[in-house]
Length: 170
Length: 169
Image 1 (cartoon, each protein chain N blue to C red):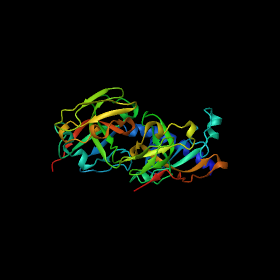
Image 2: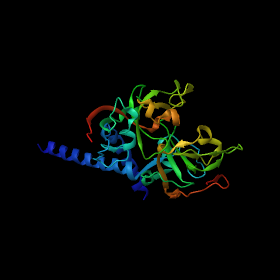
Image 3: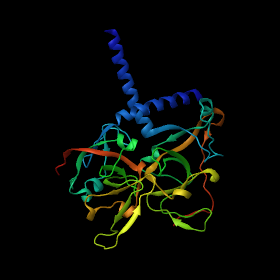
Image 4: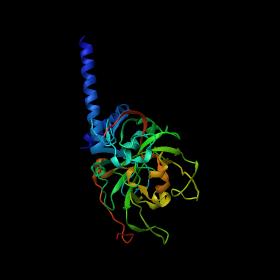
């Protein structure tokens, strides 16, 4: 009988912990690991093995910005890829709805449509971003990167950086 | 600090796996929105925007005043959405509101439609990779993919499974 009581106690604890965990990772904050070179100088990836994976950056996401979907220029955001729902990407937010923006490597100037944004990787050479698939809906965004928490020697705040001379909002 | 970070990371992984089971069936309340668990994507309850769900865009199928629907979230996570399903999605024009529409076509399908109500012109588009084409059942009064184009699959939040009850206003 004591075993069953213990199992029931354990089940209750696990269920409570899971509910709290879902709520926290869904509403407040979660942690993502970086793989891919698209943000290279800012965030570095690890390799696919376990030890290499621990060497890669782990980034803390905050999700409070998703209540009203309010972002600022230069934030690093995590979003679901518009061409594949299983992939998650991390890129820098360049332009927000209503901005007029110069498309890189062309002479085009486009207006970002309502409810959309323009994202680009810091490492333009190996980055699959809005230059390929155009502006993405804001609803795809999963959170905003706040700081690097792992490895310890690289732990720092992720700073905003706004590219100059690209955007004009009026 | 570092050890704490690793622990929190593994806990998050575990809880996300458990979360899949909990979010399998969730309840979407229309105008009478009540939240049972406070979760962004709706653990067991989400507000749907009144203008969109209780509007006329799905008129013969769903009520004008709004219905209480049971929505299951596993199909959209695992890609099992097919033409003809009614889905809940995040609006591409305003991320704060959710829309309820029927899936007409998946990636690679060719869709023909009239750009405006009553016009003779027909436009044919191909749905790009990873997108779906959403349209309301009441095509006269529906703001859908004919206006804002194909919608990324990742914006779909769940498939409507059944109607639970009707809201009497």
